Figure 1 (tube, rainbow, N blue to C red):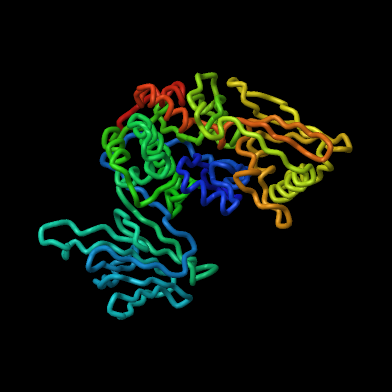
Figure 2: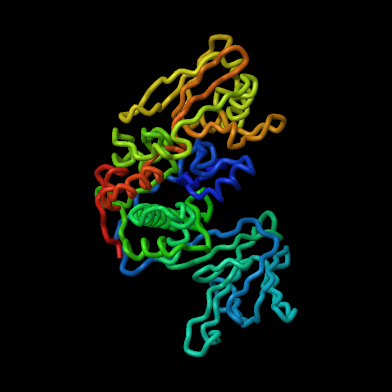
Length: 449
């Protein structure tokens, strides 16, 4: 969660390829930011939790690309291009298609160089032409975006009000077609079957929660394809696909409502409480999302325990910069002299910290706020990398001379399912139902469709 907007907070990435990208970019994933989601780091609007049952399998709208200037679509021999939401012209075009937009509208150039245009203010949909499959009697191959396979159909939505030359690409697909790409993106490929099944149920529950919230607010996108929500990619493993099929329609509920089923990479042995991480939203106050004492299974995780040392000037300047960006009083902090735990949750994980500067002034931050502040990018400071990142809000700090040493546990916000604990549970033969009831105490498992 990375900008002050009413978006969800998500989940923590498990995939190490994606981790390398995050580290290289010195950015923070959605699961890592408080200030990046809704005001002050909350995961979205205060809409009530949605009801659970569906008559048929629902679809999901996934933003695949944001602010693109050009995209190529291929797959079937021909694709149908049409204006979204109208009965306007439908044009059958030979692939590959090259799509751009401008203040005059959307331009689509086909494989033979022919150009079709749609007027400004109109979004465009691209659909596989079911009348011309590659083999007579078969279904057409999926659409490919820049070579990546995507189920469903594609919507091109330019930023008409501010930058018409840039557009988002949104893929609409059945949710069960979406989930294998999420499970594959979130877990390592050789992890246990039961872990994949637990991930499928958590991801399905989260996605359906977001779907309902997005549509009640009139948004055009249900979920992002990144860690802003949960990672979705075109590649899928047989294990992930099997896990989705085995748990088809299964979701987590509390008092008849869908749960916002958070998950993160490594809890470090002490789960966090959603009501503390994102305190402004009623759906984060439900009991299954509050940290409770439980057995830990993530001891083999690479960041189960970690240590980072920084100069006190680096730490102080990042705290100030985060304070200015979020309008927090810590913007006025002087040279940092101490960091103390001010409160803990029932699982003994720190909820709040008290910071004192050289003047004796005190500042109180929630655990996740402190993590975000310590990782705040500052232009003339070293970029945040794997080596200097503060990985979680479960930490202790020692200040001496001109240095601050942070000793911490886990990676990510720590709410809900710990992916590395799920891996450890799977290695021991635990089934997915036992896993999710451990991570979300008091939930019910319901077949939604």
